[in-house]
Image 1 (tube, helix red, strand yellow):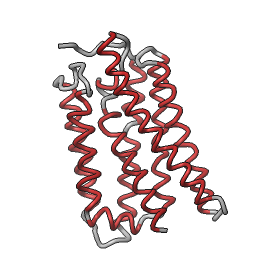
Image 2 (cartoon, helix red, strand yellow):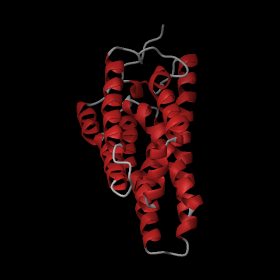
Image 3 (cartoon, one colour):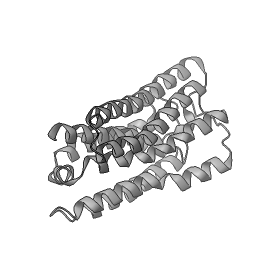
Image 4 (tube, helix red, strand yellow):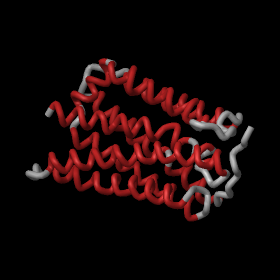
Length: 236
């Protein structure tokens, strides 16, 4: 059994990440609360909050109990968290009345605004600078997230000011953001496979607490949000 390589991550990066990681959960919760006020489904907010708390607890417990420690393809963190969570979102949640109500009552701008939390992608770059992630992978993934986050502000402003190019810009932005997260997810798996075969640096740091929250939460959530945006634009 191959165990995860232990890369030294400066403590200030781990602490900063723990301070920053609540951002997406807070933004999504506030988004759901605002939309729930416009609909008849008031219970959805409690469900979302309860799920986030339980899911974060599950990720933490699994990580500290060594569930993700074995170097495996696909990575154990994906098998135990990402894949089941993705199934929950795209197979179950997508068909619920609550999701349809949220999509109906949410504005396109509010859905796009949520992607501001992807500034957290800067931690990919910080980890690479400190030799805890492969640099080409981390810089491309990190810059893609940061660019998506920052550009979302301009897309929202274009929509609010009813610019003639706003719709095309939103489609291009949405495609770029989705492709970025798909690249990150696929590249991480490819690097893991290469690491197992050659012994080169992998993405082991992303299976260690607190950074294991990234693969466990980000890919399914971000792709789900991009899909919701696409559906919203198609309806409009």
